[in-house]
Length: 294
Image (tube, rainbow, N blue to C red; front, side, top):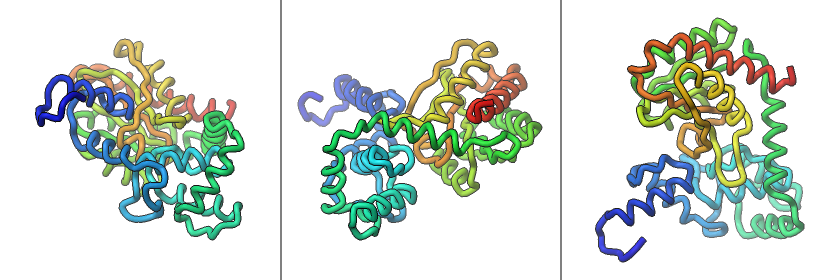
C-alpha cells in the first residue's frame, strides 16, 4: 500500500479496489461501510476467538472457513457467507455430536482440533461443497405456484417491481414487494417472510448485470442458475447483460436463492418495463421447472 502517510492517494485507492474485487464487493475504490466491515472480518483468522450464536451474529473469515470445513465433512452449514447463524450452529452441534464432543454449538479449541484432524484425511473440499449445494438446491425447489417470492428495490425501481410482482402473481406465486435503501433490512424482511426466492432490482446507470452470491469455495447454485436465465431473457430487450458472483449484503444475508438485477438507468427502463417483467417471470418459471427436471 506504500508508506503510511495518512493520505488516501491513488495507490491506496488502487489497493482498496483490489481488496474489494477479491471480497466480492463493488470495486469502486471507496472505503465505505461494506468495505470497512469486510476489512474487519478479514482480520478474524481461524482460532483467534470462540465462535457461537449471538445477536447480531458473529461474522468473519474464520466463520466462512468453519462453514467450508463443515460442509466438506458432510455437515452443510448453508453458503460460506461468513455469518454464524442458526444453520451454522446446528451443523456445528451435529458435527460435535458425531465426534464425541459436547454438542453445544460453540467452536473452541477441541472442535477446531477435530475439524483439523478429519480435514487432514484429504477430503476434496471444493467438490464436496459443490455437490451438497447442488443437492440442496434441487431438493428445495418447487413449483412456481407454491413459491413465496420477495421483489426488492432500493429506490427508483418501484414501477418495475410492481410489474414483476404482477407477472409472478399471475403465475400463482405469493409475492410481496419490499422497498428500503438498506439491503440488509430487505434481507431481514425476506428471511422473516420465509421467502423461497429473492429478486432485487437496482438502478445503476453504469451497470447491466445479474448478480448472485459467490465466495471462496462457495456459490449459490440456485442463484447462479436463475441469474443466467434472467440475463438470457432480458438481454434482447436491453442489450448485453453479464452475470456476476458477488458477496454483497443482499446476496450474502438472504437465506434463500437470491439475485440482484442491475439493469441500467431507471428512466431508460420505463418503455421496457412490461417486457422485462414478463422476461423475469418466464425465467423464474423455467428455473423451477428445470430444477425439478421438467
